[in-house]
Amino acid sequence: LHARHPAHFGFFASLPLPEVEASLEETAYALDTLGADGIGLMTNYGGRYPGEADFAPVFDELERRAAVVYFHPTAPDCCVNLLPGVPAPLVEFAFDTTRAIVSLLFSGTLARCPDIRFIFSHGGGTLPMLAGRIAAVAANLPQATQYPGGIMPEFKKLYYDVVSVFDPVGFTAVQQLAGVSHMLFGSDYPYWDTEANVSALGRQTLSTADRQAIERDNALALFPRLAR
Image 1: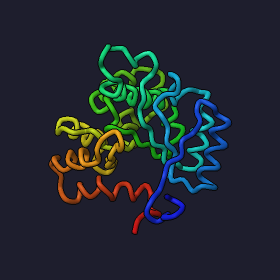
Image 2: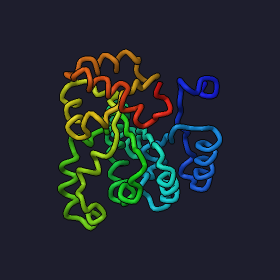
Image 3: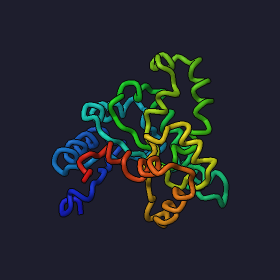
Image 4: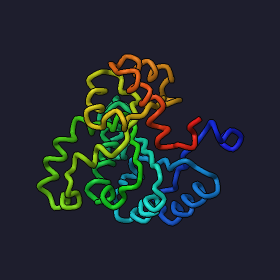
């Protein structure tokens, strides 16, 4: 579809993590040969999180390319059936997004790779609620020396889609954490009917300019080749 209509469609390429060498090869092939617009990753791979030292070469290469890197959540094996009868997407996906962000933070990946544009789905999971707590605790830990400007500015550098952020409480939390300029529309198709997320965004109290930024303009700033 991208090859037939490159001015209308873009795509992210998935990497075969936790295989590092294969992921480096796929990054080059996807970005240089196929013309991918970014890389799509999962929040964990068999319980291994993106900040692990073994994965550093992959993120260093993505940093060299100033790539856009999108994370979609999954659940670690430990927590898939933690609450019997409660499906993992209900709460575990949100927690796993937060785990992935904290992994990147504490490992120093966010400090080492400032030019990667990271996008996290579902409003950053539970991060908007926990960001202040994480920043306050982390400030007293050795890892904080990697972030002389503080922890909260690192969270504000990230991008967050507003998929399934259906209520004003959650939406306002994401907005206060990220600012409108770092919020992106997403449909989560086929897991949600597209209209569900269109309607949810429509119910939020936003100016016309802010709504257009979330629906279109912020994405075009990340992918300017699609601007037309």
